[in-house]
Image 1 (tube, rainbow, N blue to C red):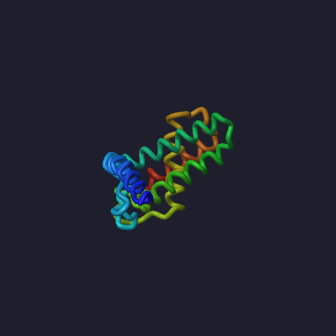
Image 2 (image 1 turned 120 degrees about the horizontal axis):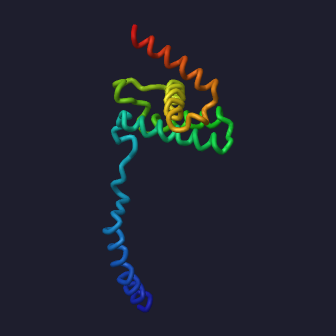
Image 3 (image 1 turned 180 degrees about the horizontal axis):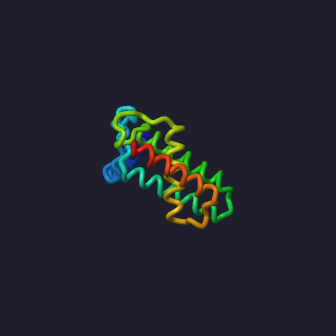
Length: 146
């Protein structure tokens, strides 16, 4: 009888705060969305701009902190590629439904991050990287003309 009385008091004491917590913080343990059921959205130009700028910012900060430039660029490019694969499934809106593999995203990210870093912190970019970027840009422009 004593056990039963304490159980009811404890239950009534904790019931209201638990219900209030569930209502205010929208805790729903039964209807959690399953990631595989969510539709993956392709990366838009706005998304790519954000990821590119974040990579360029990281590259500028790491080069100022005297981190090896190639290592910093590699980390920024890998992050760029991983975010697009992880969040967007490797899809880019401008390219349609074709998924881009990690290696191509890495290479594209490297080019785009260097391009942005040249605008943000041109003094931190090594001359040979600037030269290589200019050559790749010329090739890209020539391919577009054809």
